[in-house]
Image 1 (tube, rainbow, N blue to C red):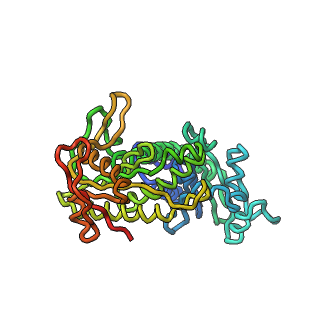
Image 2: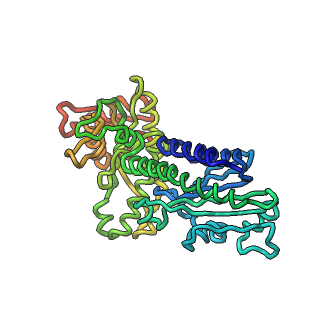
Image 3: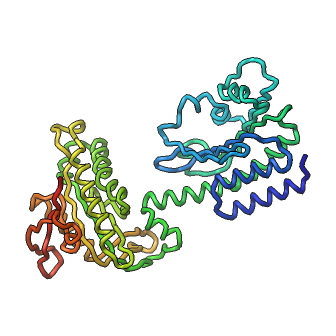
Amino acid sequence: MQTNEKLEAIEDWLITLALGSPTMSAMFDGLCQRLCDIGVPLDRALLGWTTLHPLIHSETVFWRHQQPVEHDRFHHAMEETEAWQKSPMRWLWSSGESMLRRQLERANAESEFPLLDQLKADGFTDYMVASTAFELPAVAENLGHTGLLASWASKSPGGFSDEHLSAITYLQKRLALAVRANVQAQITRTVAETYLGRWAGSRVLNGQIRHGDGQSIDAVIFYSDMRQSTAHAEALGPDLYLRLLNRYFDATAGAVEAEGGEILDFIGDAVLGIFPIEASDVAPAATRALAAARRSAARLKETSIGDLMDGNGPLQAGIALSVGRVMFGNIGIANRLTFSVIGQTVHAAARMEALTKELGQVVLLTEDIADHAGAEAVPVGDFHLAGFREPRPIFALKLA
């Protein structure tokens, strides 16, 4: 079938991948194709692994001979589906065994796994699933399992020979090295983007990690703050108040992300978002920020809190948009930093948000933002904002 030199060539290829950053799909597809090239009668293969992600529990890559590779992600709520519960991969995962094999053409009785009955009906003759453990402490602590599962199936008469199985298991262990490197890098990106945002997270991972690293940029700032938050916290207690906060953040921060902005910080129950200005053209960023403000106001209006506390009113918040120059980068102390924005543009948005309740408005705008809102921007007067020398014209955004 294969020579040691051919296996060593595939091993060397896998090591090279582990030193780079290939996609899982490209990596698994390449391995399966190379197994076929050295004579392993492979017709179907599935690679699965768990990860650390706020939404995603696990991922798979599904390979079939001469068909496109399929990459799937499974949310936490999908973890215990019936198909997964009755699968040979789950049995192996929970049993602690390292391998399960079924020579399907020799089996006359119904299998304990519905998948294997289906594979036999589809003409498969042999099936093997193996696990390869590797250490990822964060995943192990949260999900209980680290490593990969891979299943291998053949339609060839007689299925896999001992030599075929030896080649597969030998290379799967080497594959695990590349998978571990890929998953670890993926987790690092996920953590950075989850806690810092995509834009800031990418800068930190690209090396902007020193105190003072950053740059001055032009941007539209979105700032919102929930009303009556202290009273709500006292009335609800910690658990229900956390649920309320998450609804509020879904409505406000979720709207910013939906319109292409980025959340830089949650300051208590306040949301600080940014829409960077590119090529000195304010219009696209202002338009997206205005859309986020409208979407946020609509979501807040539709979000009832009656199941959490007395009354059936919607969540209430103030929102402010300002535009100008900000410093975007690391602030804090040398060994404890946050990546955020500072500057008078941010202060203006925060001061304006404080005016929303006094003026009975949901969304307030600076004049530069109002210019992009057209007739939907209504002047409400000139105001002294704390920290600014001159009064500023403030506008309210008409809402449906």
